[in-house]
Length: 134
Image 1 (cartoon, helix red, strand yellow):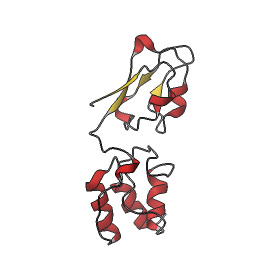
Image 2: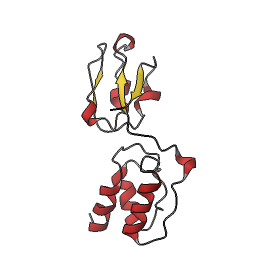
Image 3: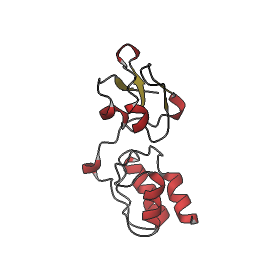
Image 4: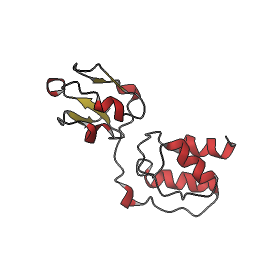
């Protein structure tokens, strides 16, 4: 892994949300370092993140591409316990292993690990996951 990739990856928000079109922040950083991706693909990083990436790559700054998603304040997932059916689909969808539980039992989110990527929400068949401020 190159020093440039490391520097770019440290700037990225580590949400692992995939909104950039890559499987996570590290693959996006690798693509930028290789010259295969632009600096404007990260909604969680927002305009400030795009500017920071531009500085590291010594390219012109530009706002992030709003067609990829909305820049939002920090958030974490919360499972509404009374509604959880224990299907484990949220566990499978979480890219950072922040959700724990067992089949047919209520699940919970380990808040310090949750990046707020929102990938667990569409996976939940009973809509028992909400996003809240940390």
